[in-house]
Length: 124
Image 1: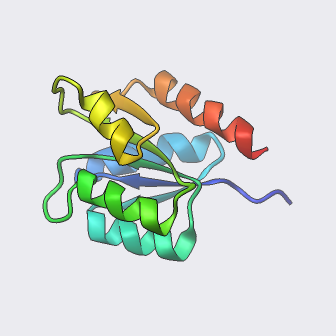
Image 2: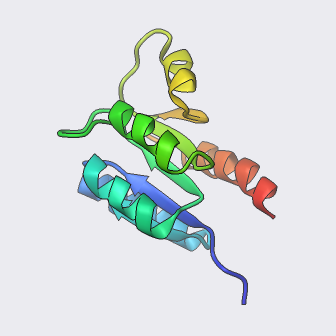
Image 3: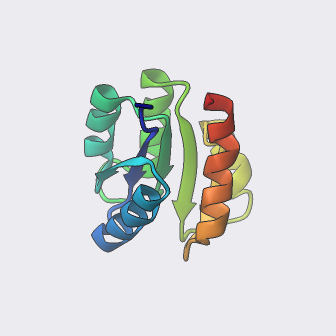
């Protein structure tokens, strides 16, 4: 049996996490959920997911902090920032932080799946 690719969804909005988990599970991924940055880092250390979706604005350890720490812990992790924040040059800022893609909320699920499958092709 082929091992499922693990995706970690990190967002402080629980309903958003559950909805995204349901969508990704239906696509055949093993979806893990963290509702804060600290929990996300614990999951990354333990589970070693291949892909992570990451919100930027979270209480405590925010998305930028998580990005910095993740790049040291798991440099090969494919990171998709999913955020409602829309500031000039955000894509450039995130690129320098180690993110691979940026999607805005409300999330376009087709764009999300296209982004994920674009990366998954490299894993197969």
